[in-house]
Length: 298
Image (tube, rainbow, N blue to C red; front, top):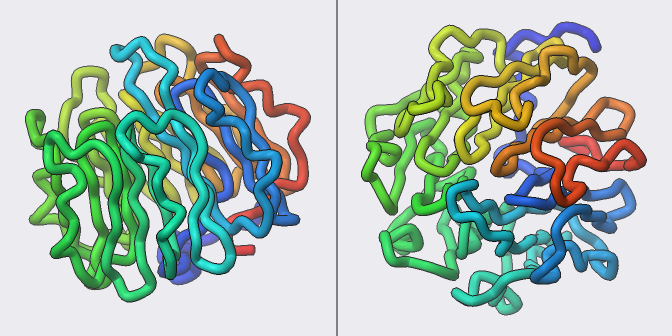
């Protein structure tokens, strides 16, 4: 892969990102170039029942932190017409998105689903015990992220807003600026700045927020307790909890997109194939046979 400066890479970032790979608690989802979707891993609640989906342009996977010791999760798909589909665990109505319209991006947290509308407002369904769905007054939002109990919004001016659980100060992002991407983990939040550096807030028990020295970054992902970044040269680095080898990505190359689940990490290569490391108890890392996964920006 040819070198791309962080500044040039940021200029190529679309206002509304179309994520074509997603990682949940125990499953992995991929959007194929023909608009269909594939999924592998735990399917106890039907979160992998996506074979009938068509005309999709983005996917998201609900995550659950490892301490929960549960497989409940859901999968969300954004259609080309701006409507949304969801399958999987629905105890908190997080899959009740059939009436959503004019959606341009989706995010999935534990027990909830977030949708970004083309007018910069945001929709949310699901658990709201910590106020994680209190996004009714948000405006000028261009990207959204969902952690376990908190929700992050990136505004058009590069500032960030957050709602939900703030026990570990994971919502203390009001002073952030020049941000071009946001992601949320179990109890931490990360932001990618326009100069290719990364900022983080929240719980740092496992070093998941130790990102201050990262440079030349063009994409970020947050697992439950680990943080992953994609460099402009197509290589990947990670920090945080590594019990299952989810941070063992130093030998990856030719990567164009990344996703982080609870305890596994997924990378999309420039040839449309996929690699994965980490917890594979339910086969969520068995993606070596995948091909034709849509590249970001296509």
